[in-house]
Each structure stands twice: as structure tokens, then as C-alpha cells.
Image (cartoon, rainbow, N blue to C red; front, side, top):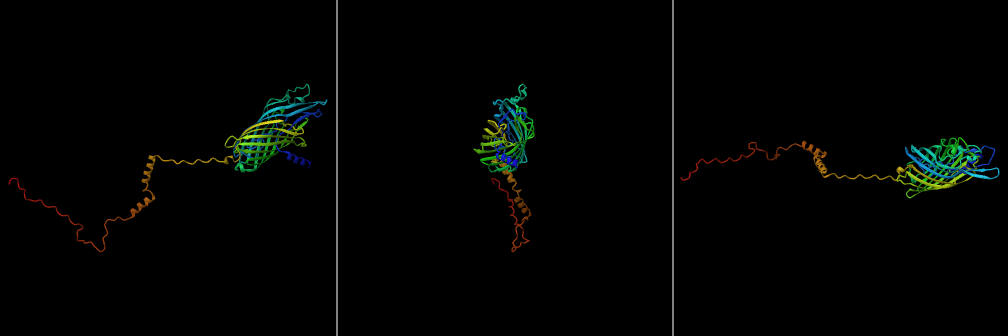
Length: 414
């Protein structure tokens, strides 16, 4: 049960993703590793929507939703070699003095509860002595000199959300639970501290709480390697990872203030633990709250000689990731239809048409039917107490015109 106690102890310490410190070559008889397959950057960018600068969130893109972004890091002195000589003296050489990296992320949502992602990380610029201090005198060490740029291991990501849904409003979303399964493929330049020798599988359990104006998240996971790597006498193998973060949403959720801590512990003995802490400021410039800008910075500390803990990290990120329920939050009011007044000529034609159709209305049709059914009155009714005389003429004859006078008119002068 000792291994279980160690596992529980590591999970209690696990609060995020990072890496650790300096490597020592003490001139032992055991062959020293040349650092092939050692990655100086153990922070992995999470694709898709998130309320944190580095930690993964349980939020999932909506069905057929698309997300993309870029994360730029500058970190100083993540790897050192402390060469101890037989006379008791020692020299410190920085394998990687500084590095500037970029992670380009893409994600796609399926059925509102599954999200697939791809991350392409690259080293834009770096400087250091590489593994040349480990090479014996007289040996050509040009192969082990650090290249100024390199391609890192490509990563594939699948996230499944078990609790919560995208239809929930941001201020009432509550708890979320998701499982993220990531895998790094050895496509990077492993000779220049930009990738692992084999495949790396990284399951990560995500528990978060989002109730405006506060978001909090806990990540618990592991890095399981198919191939171990060595730098000097230190071995990089399976690691336990974790992270804890909190974000405040201010000024109508446009301004973000965040703090997070991340760590990694070597599972072989759990005696090498590195812890990285940083603060961040974010800004959401668009009304749809799909674009997020982050600027963060911090430092690290560790116990033992864990590889990869930087003395200083500065990070800038930009992402487009429509969050769950954002399309249902504060919908824009629909414009009311405006009443259209008819033109005078059109109004007159309308009135005339209405007058012509009055007779065709149901009431007019009923009146017409009633008139056709009624009998026509052709004579006035005869009173029953005054019967008509059949011998009397119906009408009185008109008086005859007077006959002309036959007496001639007298002539003038008689």
C-alpha cells in the first residue's frame, strides 16, 4: 500500500501543469544522458473555451462550433547543468538560457458534449549551450549544440463533458465535470530539447465552477511516457500533474483577473516536485464574448532536481472560442415592424374596391337572395267590405275637345 500512499500524496500536491530545475553530472560510472528527448517546456496549452490563461476548463464548444488561438511564451533558464569536477569545483552551464515558443490551437465541437482539438507548438527562438558540456574532450559536439528554432511535438486532444450543458447561462452554470485525453506525437526536434523520444499520453480530469463573477477550476492528470529520457544523471519518466486557478469577471465580464498555480511531480519516488505560479489579466473586446486576450507572468520553485522549471515566464495569448450558452445570453431584441401608410392613390383605389365588393359580401348576398324570393306586388289589395262593380268602367273617360265654329268670320269693311 506504500505506492497508494505516495499516489494520494502526489494528488494532494497536484494543482497544475509545469516542470522543474537543474541537472547534475557527478562523474559517476553510469553513462550520462545527453538530454535527447527532454522537453524544456512542460506547459501544455489547452484548446477550446476556457476561463483561465493556462488551465483547462470543463466548457465545451457547441455542436459544429470552431475555436482557434495562439499562445506565445517567453521563459528564462528552464534547464541547467551543474558539472562537478573531481577536485570539488563545479561549473553551471545553462542548457537552455531562454526560449520563445508559440502554440497554435484548433478545436471543433460535436453534439454539445464532445470537443476535438489539435495543438501545433514551435520554438521561435532559443539560446543555450545544449548538451555540449556532457561531451568528452576531442569529440565533435556540433550535433549537440542548441538550434535557434525547432518544431515541437504535435498534440491531439479530446474532451468529454459529463456535467453541465451549453444552454446554461454563464452566471448560473454552476459545476462542470469533464475528462480531457491528450496525446503528444514525437514529431518534434528531440535533439534540441523540443520534444520527447516517444509518445506521451496525458489524461486530465477537470472540475470547475462558474458562477459570475467568479470562475474556479481544478485539474488533475498525468504524463505517461512510452520512452524515458535522461539529462546527465536525471531521468524524465512518468509524471503527475495538476493545477488550481481562480478568475474574477469584472466590468460586465469584459475584464478578467486570474491567478493560478501549476505543478508536476516525478512519479518515481515523488521526491522531485516543481511548482509554478503566475498572475494574469484578460480582456474580452467583442460583445459576443468569443475573443479573449491574456497577459500573464510568474516564476517557479521546486524541490529536488526536476527538469524544466523556469526562473521567469511571460505569456501572451489570444483565442476565439465561443463559450457555452453565449448565443443564449442577453439576446438582442427583435426590431418591431413599422406600419406602412398607403399612398393617397392607393388608398382611394382601396376604398373604391371596398365599395364595389360590399354587394359581394355575405350580408349583401343574403339580402339579394331575400329580394328574389319575395313575390312582386302588381295591384293594391281590395278591401273586403267594398267589392268591385264589374259593369263600371275601370277609369272615367276624358272630356271631348270642343268642335270648331262653322260661321265664317266677317270681312273687313262690311
